Length: 267
Image 1 (tube, rainbow, N blue to C red):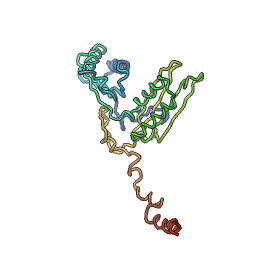
Image 2: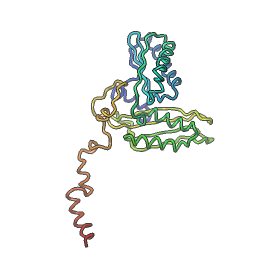
Image 3: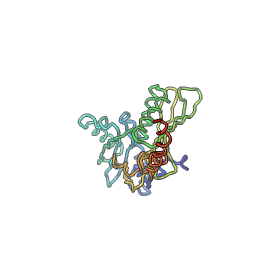
């Protein structure tokens, strides 16, 4: 199941929230759903270089609130906020609603966001950089930022080869069956001269132990990491000091070291 279900959809209501928050009756549910898809498709194409990670859409009575999570807020805001106003007017025309609000949230650590990591690899592949080099660089920067594991899978005519193939790069751990594990997932495409290359990215950010805020606009930052098991702290092994004793770091190991290696060294 872990390999076949989308890791984000699998964790909805457990440690993840929905990216669309509204109520739809039988009559207008499909209309709102199609409208959401149009908004996301339009914004992704309109702000191509804005580093968009996700777009959260909320609806209240006659009001549409669009929250854009991005690593480059300056590009979307524009000089003096002109770009945001322009996008707002375009969304009003697209949806036919008068009351449209746009919020912009900055992503502090883009290396830990699967969509941004996938886009970075895709842009490098489109610029004819070797796919292995681009992927390994992305994996290294993600792990440097504190991720517990990352997995990247590329499919297509890799390196311009005649026959399409798949290659997978893994480092650390990404347990897809464990619902407590905060796993971010993205599926992006690189449009190259010789065809389309699919890129899938899984990033494991650690284990969520406490109650999680399910609002998709919740940005935790450093506080958000406090309810996770980082994989590097003492939480992962309750008897952290005992491990040192077994390896000769405690009293027992110290005495053994003096009797064996220490005596010979002095003689």
